[in-house]
Length: 263
Image (cartoon, rainbow, N blue to C red; front, top):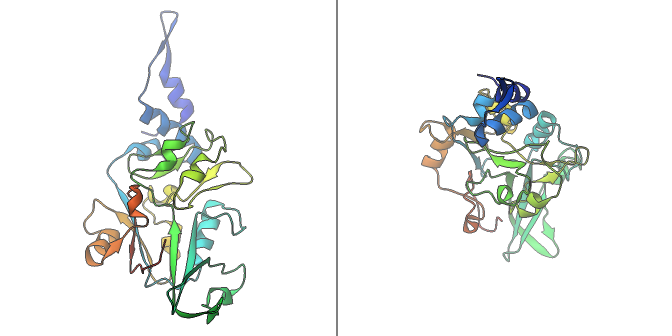
């Protein structure tokens, strides 16, 4: 049953014999009612456990075209400036002597030539280059949730980390705490933002925008509880790993074909 915040509050306070009786709901239901109004996602979807979403990226397929970043900005209203991003693509260059150089792809900002590898960088001959898409890892043990002083950042029961924009005070604690650099402060709303795997889409049976537009199938999304979902198949058939596993955050973005030197 769809329950908006206003309706929930009306249901929670009733009069009885001239007095007021308060019905205290569980924090999960209250948070779902608040989040429904903020995001447009039905409260039932925010509390359901039928899904456990997962994301995978095949680095060997990524061509650095930047369509995923463009789609994300358009879909989620992310400011167009390159420093504001919910997802981004990093270019790694490995020199012949083992030096690693990393920068962010800026297709559409600097022109298509910006994605091509350099033959030589700072005197180092380039041996190979590849692209690594990055986004929020929707950690099982999320530091961002732990440090938020007003509980604006929270984990839905299906595992996705969300932000209640009306609670956020813009303190940036979550931005500093995220070891993946996946958060930013929206300059207009002064609210912390990050990738939500397009929560408003996946709760309606659609793919995240970045997955939908990827021309080479480098981004894969699905239900981890379904053994035949695309993400489970990729994890089963390929050797995958997560970023910064030693931190104990238990990321839910899995990488196939990840090469040494990626951080």
